[in-house]
Amino acid sequence: MKDIAQRLGENSPYLFPLNSLVIQDTTLEYTESIALSNSFEAFYKVLQIASSLGSIALLQKMDVVSKTFFLGEKLRIRKIPQGEISDELKYQAESLLFSERKGKSLVNIFDQQHQLAYTFELDYIIFTEDSFQRVFKSFYTAELALNNPVEIRNEVTVTPLCSSHFQVIIQAFSAEQCAGHFDHYPIVPAVFIVNRLLSAIETFFKMQDTSLSTKTLVVDSLEIFPSTATPPNTDLHAHVYYRQITKNNYLFVCPIHDSKTEYGNYIITIKLQ
Image (cartoon, rainbow, N blue to C red; front, side, top):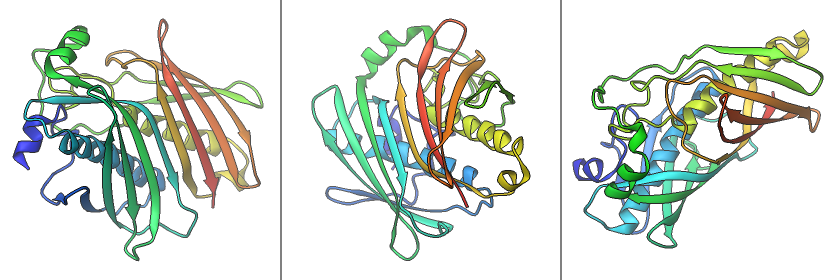
């Protein structure tokens, strides 16, 4: 497993521990126990593991010995309708390689009863080490601790605007928080932004009437369409559009930007239980 870590652009603390990773002929398997009472925190953990596992699956498919970097181009994850998700989840990943620069990973996530809990797919742009360093040279940070995990608890400000929009401001992620994604070129992971958007959505529901604020919030689906790499050390903004699409489901469209640049769109469906 050490060999995988050396060839993958991701490192600790962003990359999950590889000791439970099982490599099959065409698939990868990983089992993780997630004992978290907050459904959003549990979903964030699932998303982070699936994203990194997808990168590893594609790396195995490529069968290269040099360090390779995988940047997400489009991400989709969907919860399969059923009851509560169990604490222990099993991930099965396979990948498709379209060219030297393009690939896709598919991850099925099962609960303890072997029932499908989530489906996940992520399209990648693939970079060699040289091309990555050339394209993202402005992100280079010489002094960066790579082995000190930092909790993602950046302050989130939520301001209601009207019946269909609210404003979100996410406190800047530091380069140290983004360590391991990737090496000494810290790029804010999309999963970190999802973490803070979910916190904002939770705050938004608590601002509503009591019948909504006391419900359990579950991520039913998520789509991410990045437009460019998100740098650390800049506050992020989202002018969030939302609407109720069924009795218990809400849609949130979250375009992420700072004062100058659009970084992508995050589309989240939340179910109230």
